[in-house]
Image 1 (cartoon, helix red, strand yellow):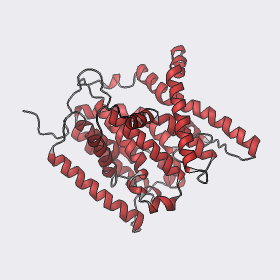
Image 2: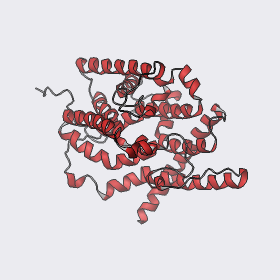
Image 3: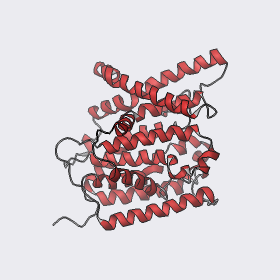
Image 4: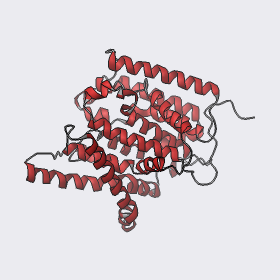
Length: 348
């Protein structure tokens, strides 16, 4: 008889299976990111964007938790085996080198803008060492979040494989503690970027993703679904009060009160709903398109940062969407086809 723990993870057999609906969801999220950065705030509020495209980054964070939870293979690694040379090489290939390519691209673009238009787009400071691009745009903090996952995720996975329920509770508790603590720290008040890019702000989103990873392998229990949807509905109501009724929570920075432990269940509900609505695999061309964009989502995200750093919101929405998707996808294909990162690492 299985244990009563509702978060018990069943190990995957063989290699990790790829679910198309995860890539499709990532594709929808990256399109949402671009639209979010292209539209003016008035339009976003009028279209209730807080319930759809404004959930893009929380959805990405939930998906990270899903992927992390699905990495479970049944073996329980020791602490000494978490941060291996192979692990860091893999992360360098997938995360660091694409960032470095775009870092160089942004410098060249910034110099071109200075020479051609006499516009100063380049910005160099200490934050460049933690992911801020020289030509920065909206959403750059997400890159710094991803860099932090390189160090946080192995230990989270280590704990989740041994104590799933305790790890979920711990992540949520740590986020709450961080929100309360950071509200009294002058550094976070003075340096908005550090607060925006603090991974602990998204610990509960990752926790929801870990829970949802189980639903990819076996159905969630009815009582878990009911509790999950109830929390998501409460988060939905909170979002409305926050955006349209001037609700204020003192222990959170005003800019980020719509993204916290109080709202991430709603983003998780979006992910869960798409998982249930979309097929594991389909030959549908529309789904294939979004799955392809989802696989390239990191590269597209990097490109859109530079694009909106060069072309603020007054530029055409359709032009911005097309340019970022096309350039980002071509960047992804070139990076994977020619394996530039792997070639450099093989010489290291």
